[in-house]
Every structure is written in structure tokens, then in C-alpha cells.
Image 1: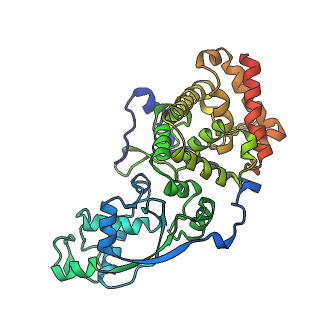
Image 2: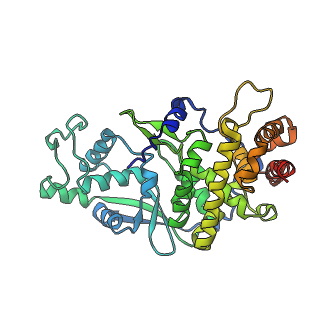
Image 3: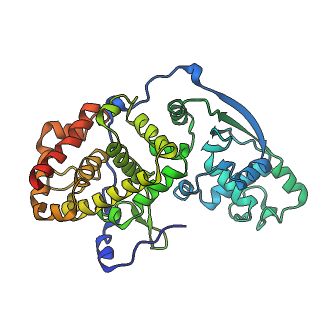
Length: 392
């Protein structure tokens, strides 16, 4: 269910033009763009066959994770869903699925989320076969799964599907690369979407709690909201770019640059940190990150305003879209101080931050090769130094 936008007068004014927001700038991570080559012997993939009934039961028992919050952003329309069900009823084989199996034996769906979601919707009574969408089986107009004749139901639920299962002993970095290669959806998964598929509740809940707060909405100028067909305002995470911003804040706040230098890549670093949250972080550590993020978003909104998280040099006529590297650079710098200490220096901080984009070294650190450890260190250190000099 979509989250509704807070209905306050100032919020309404702030989002009046948010459908024209520039969105998220494409990132060039350069040398850190790819996971380092791995030994092919590390791959452990088995091929398994399931009936649709077995798949449905495992989904109902939470043994197959469809990542519900991921689904909400990428839902097939009814026509595509009905055509898939019709194809199964016609006996047309489905393309193979890809599952990740964790150490508990549960599966996460990497390729095939929409197809399995459609099957689940049909078998649970949430999808009706509409005549306007059926191409061959017009006589099934208006039927749900339960209203089908028993032989038809048995044929449907007994249909076999093939799944390639990536086994638990396959290293996470290898899995990440495999997921990049095998995803065949209409819109291949972004890196954060893959991390989400591989993650557990702890990291998922943390990132959601961070990006679904008013302070983040205001600091990002409501970039992660859009207008639904019925005119209501709903969240739009832009292929989970919002969660990537929050993850990067947490990862670089919690990790020394020397440790980052040992990572295989920026993606590998973020994947490893997601795993750390899920396996190692205590409640107090998670609370500390939430508090720091809230403080940072309030500070960025109040101090930087429309200049927050965007490349906007003093001589530039207009600001750019949100830049991931600028986000972590500015957000981490302003997380270090209470708002009361920053407010007397608001204009100076805005000027200093915008002047950084006239510095070739800093500007390059947020534009090109952003995964390079030297550039990470440069963009994180520069604004912190400026704020410390101004605030003391």
C-alpha cells in the first residue's frame, strides 16, 4: 500500500512542482565500478524443478521471499498478469527462474519476481481473468483460480517450472555479479535492487525507516515522490536510489577510509556493509545511525535548502539533479554538529559548499571515478574541514 504524503500547508507548497524535479544524476564510479574477477570454481548453482503448487505453498510459508516492498515499485499491469496466467493454462513453458538460497534454506527470487507475484495473486484470489485481456481462452472470462473447473486447476497447479538455485556457499560478491548477468526483466535490476534481494529484515527496515521520514523528504526536495494516476501523491523510490543514499551514509559513517581501500569495489563495499548490518549490528548501533541520519537530514534541509546534494557551482545558472557522491559528502559533514551550532553560519556554509564545485579536485571527486578511494577520501574530508573551520 502506498504511503500518503503528510498533508500540511508547507508540504503542499514544497511539492507543488515536484513532478519536474531533476531526479538522480547518473554516477560514474570508474575504477570501483565492477566487482573484481573471481574464480569460476566458486560458483555453486543447481537446477531444481518445482510445481506451481509447491512454489505457491513455499511463498505462503515465507520459504520463498518475494521482497514485498520491492514488488510495490514494480508491479505488472493486469493485462500482463492475465496473459501470463493464460500462457500457463495453454501449456506454454515459462522461462527459467533464478533463486538465491541462504544458509537457512530459504530462497530469495532474483529473476522472476513479477511472474511469481502474478501466480501468487492468481492462486490467492487477487487476480481475475478479464475478457479484454484474454487472447485465446475467452471462455475463462471472469474466472478466479478457485472458480476454475477442478481439472483445469490441477493442470495449472501441477505445471512444472525450472529454477536455477545459487547455493549458500557461493560468496556474496560472486552472487552479486551473477545477479547482474542473469536478470532478464524488462528493466534490469539496479545495484541497490540486487542488494535488497540479497538482504535481510534488519537492513531493509533500517533503510526504509530512514527514507520514509519527513526530514529526508524535505532535504531531497521531494524527489522521491510522484503523482499516481488518480492524482494522489505517492512515494517513488526511483529504483531504490533513495535507499542507496541512506546506505552510503551509514556505510561511510561507520567505516574508516583505510577499510574502504580494502574493498573490491564501491558496490562490493556496500554489499559487505549490508551484510554487516544484517549479521552484526546491535540495536544500539542501528539507533545511532538513525539518529545521525535524522540530524543530518534536518541540518541539510535547514542549512543548504535547495542547494542540498546537488552540484551547483557559484557561476552555474541552475542546480543539477541529486548526486549520490555529493549526498554522502554533504550529509556526513552536517551530521557532525547540532543545528543550533550551524544556523549562525548558514550563509557561509552554503557559500563554502558551492565554492567547492569550483575546486577541480573536489568536483572531480563527485563526478568521475567516484569509487576511487582517493576521491572518496577527498569528497568526505573537504566539507567536514570547512564546517569545522566555520563552526569551531
